[in-house]
Every structure is written in structure tokens, then in C-alpha cells.
Image (cartoon, rainbow, N blue to C red; front, side, top):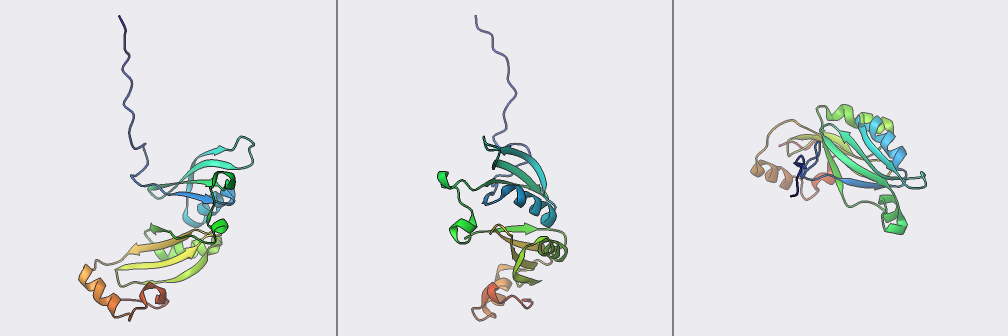
Length: 172
């Protein structure tokens, strides 16, 4: 007769994670973690060094209620960050209580402004920065609800300039 011991159920989505979790590759993960702490108030959850202890194979940080995984570049395993690839095609969108304060904090920590913060036609106070590791961050606070029709009308009024011209406020 075989006895079985009931095992606790394993959660398919681990505690603290959401369905989608970004995973960033950077050229200096330990420095990047420190930057994210200064710029966005990140908290380090865990860190696993490479066998030689020279790089980070995996780390998890939390910003607000969201977690982000990150690691150093490992070109031999085709893990390359934005700098090695010549830029990034993605942007991380960060909703915060005070977009102006977080935007200024990120810039003070070393981020480069790529889109000045302003009131946008879709209802957010929004701006974009590039972190020193090549990742693009949109920083926003939702200020007002806008219908899709209102947003489309406001976007058309920009004469095809879209968000790229958002150095000035884009209100409906």
C-alpha cells in the first residue's frame, strides 16, 4: 500500500506577480537596480549571481505593485540589452500618484528626458525618459477620463504630429 502526503497547491502565478511581468536585460544589472531604487523607488526582491559571481543571472525588483525581472547581458546566450542592440523598441509605462515628482526624481537620478512631461490629450499627465541602461519609461498620472472619440478628435487636431510634438500640453 502506497501512502500519499497532500502537498500544498502551487500557484500558477506566483504571489506578488501579475499576468505579464517585464524582464529587462541591461549591461550592468547591479548598477541598474541601484538606479531604479533612486529613480522609481524600486525595492529589490531577490538576486541570483552568475556562477563566477561577476554578473546577475536573475533579479526581481518591485516598483509600486508591479515586479520587474532583470539580468546582466550574456551575449554568448544571445541576451543583449538596448545598448548592444542600438536602442529599444519598447517602453515601460509607469502609472504613479505624482508624475511630475517621479519624472523629476528619475531625471535627477540620471535619466534623459526624451519627451517633456505635459497634459496629454488622452487624459494623462505624461512624459518619457530613457534610463542610463537604454530602457524607455513613460511616466504618467491619470488626470481625467476621456472617451475614445474625444481622444481621436484631439489626436487629429495635432495634424499628424502625435505624441512626438508633446513638448507642449495636448488637451482636449
